[in-house]
Amino acid sequence: MTGSTGAIDLSRPTSVHVVGVGGAGMSAIASVLVAMGHTVSGSDLKESPGLDRLRSLGVTVSVGHDGDQVGDVAAVAISTAIPDHNPEVVRAGERSIPVLRRAEVLAAITETRRTIAVAGTHGKTTTASMLAVALLGADLDPSFIIGGEVNEIGGGAAWSAGDLFVVEADESDGTFLELHRDGAIITNIEPDHLEHYGGFPELLAAFDRFVRETAGPKVICLDDAHAADLVGRLDAEGGELLTYGTADRARFRMTEVSSGRDGVSFVLADGDSRLGVIELAVPGMHNARNAAGATVAALAYGAEFDKVAATLARYAGVARRYEYRGEVDGITFIDDYAHLPTEVEAALGAAADGNWPRIVCVFQPHRYSRTQAVGGEFGGAFAAADEIIITGIYSSGEAPRPGVSGKLVLNAVLDADPHASVAYLPHRSELASYLRRRLRAGDLCLTLGAGDLSSLPDELQASWVSAS
Image (cartoon, rainbow, N blue to C red; front, side, top):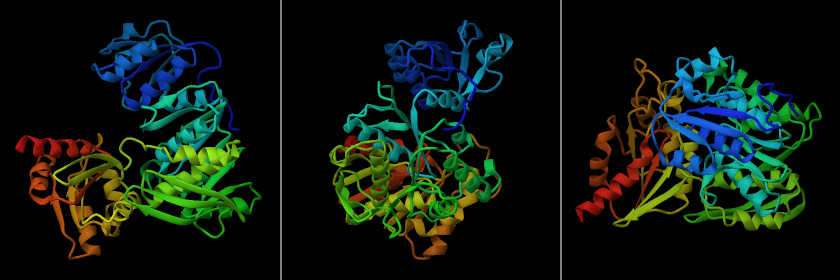
C-alpha cells in the first residue's frame, strides 16, 4: 500500500468544513465524512436539491461564503473551483486551519479501508460503479465514491460496514498517485491532460508508478495498446497481474461477445476454465470490457462469479453514460459523456449495434486545450453516424485560444470522409431548431460531450410536446 498522506487523520472523529459543498465531488466527500462519524459543515453559493439532501444527512449547510462559517474545525476542504481569496479559505489561513484539496481528503479516506482504485483515461466511472454494485451483490458490503450517479443506488457515494472501498482514481492532475490503495484497475491509457504532465511519456510514467505502488491485485485490460505495454514492462519485473480482455494473452478472456440495442453479453474464462456468461442491460463493447474488469477485481476480493453475474445483469448504468433520455414521435434520445475520440467511437459503436435506421450524432467539443491537442484525431470516430452536428467548444472555464474552435473537429471529419453529412453549429441556441427540422421517426439522436449538451434531449422533447 501507499504511505500516509499526513493531511488529516480520519480514523477518529474530527470536524471538517467543506467549501463548495453543493458540487458533485464535494457533496460525495461530505456525505461519506458524515457517515464515517465526523462533524461536517459546508457552504455553497446558492441553494440546490443537493444541499437539502446533505442537510437531511446532518451536514450544517450555509448559502453564501463568509469567514465566520468556518467555525472551530480541524480542517477546511475545497474543490479546485474555490479560489484562494474565498473568505472562508482566507479565514482558515488566518487561524492556521489546514486547507485541503478534495484529493487530499479522498486520500485520507482511503487510508481507513482496503481501497480498490479504478484508473484509466475513460471507463473509470462505469467500471467503478459496476465493481461497487458487484461487490454489493456478492454480500461484501463495500463503500464507494464514484464520479457519477449510479442509477440503481441514486447517488455516487456510500459508506458501509465492510472493509472494502471502491474509488474512481482521477489521473487529470496526478492526484491518483496519492490514494492509499490495496488494489487497482487500469481500463486504458491514452494521451490526455498532457498540459499537466508535460507530455505522453510523463503520463505513461505516472500510470507505471500507480500500478507499481499498488500492493494487491492489479487488474489491467490487455485490449488497450498502452495498457498492454504497461503489462509488458511489469511482466519483465515479475509483477503479479490479472489481465483481461479479448486478447489471446489475457488471463481472463472474453469470448462470444454479442451486442445489441438493449445490451451486451459475453463469456468469461479464467485460463482454460469457463466461468460463465455475463449479460448486461447496457450496450456496447466498451461496457463489456468494463464489466469484465469489474468482475475480475470482484473475484480477486472473494466474490462468487454467479453472484457477480446475477448482479451485473440488473446493472442500470450511470447518469450520462449511454443514458436513455426518452422517445417522442418515434425518435429516441440517448446522452453520453463521451468527449475523447475513442469514447466517441465507442458510444457510436454501441449505437450501431442497435441497428437504428439513422444515427444523428450531436457532439460538443470539451475545453480549448483538449480540442487543440486531439481535435485532429476525431476524423474516424464518427464513422458510424449518419448525420453529424459539431457545436462550439464548451470552455469549462478555459479562455479561448486563437484558431481553436469546433472547426478543428469538423475538418478532421471531412478529412476522413469528404462526403460525410456534417454540420457546424457554433452557437448552442441554434441546435434545437436545426434538429427539429432534421430528425424523423426511427432516428436515434445521440448527444455526446462533457459540457452542457445533456439538457438538449429534454429541450427537444419539450418542443415536440408543445408543438403537438
